[in-house]
Length: 296
Ligand code: SF4
Image (cartoon, rainbow, N blue to C red):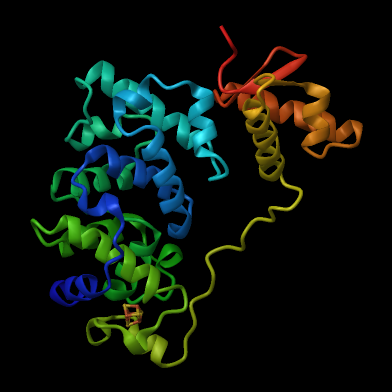
């Protein structure tokens, strides 16, 4: 199974720069960008980010508004703030470099087990099994025979099985091999007919018999959601930061540009702006608002 999946990866590997750079910072940026974002969009934001903040030191001393501008429309901008906080922590506590051990990595803002494993394998070539949704699906099917492992198999069991399959010394190939195979072959509706490990797969007979994997959950409606309005507010603040005349905007203008037309919608914009301020993404003095932190 290891050989077949690694051979498949060698033939189909996507040439993402962070996979071969052996740069822990590049691996961190890519892993954080990939959280809740499709791979096709990760490359774009990763390239923009590395051009603006090529090192931990540059990122640590960057202006918060510039950090959020660079993150742009990639979504969930708290990730950008967490990246900068992690960079600052590395400058203060780790001599300006990312730590290598899992415990220290997990103590950094925005770094969970998957991101720590990616930093360790791509950045340091250490043995660290990563488990993302694609790997849960693939390993859960291969080992446990479940159609929809995210629902049917306990996460701890999938993680233990993933660790047991891990080929020592091959993490920088193995982790992306499983991720890519899960994303491209063992998809929610799997392509068993072209699968190189079909003969070893515990779920293959069930799919061959016509069973179908049910979706884990329906996608929450985006239209009209708080998430949509938050995105609009952030876009207005980024646009204001881009204008040569200033970096902030009056609250009435902000609400109008964010599409709020009723008293209720304007109140909602104010509430969401308050939350953005609490998260360090925006500031407001009750009359005006801006991106990042208030001007000193
Ligand atoms: S045989 Fe089908 S279900 Fe099993 S690993 Fe391959 S693609 Fe996934």
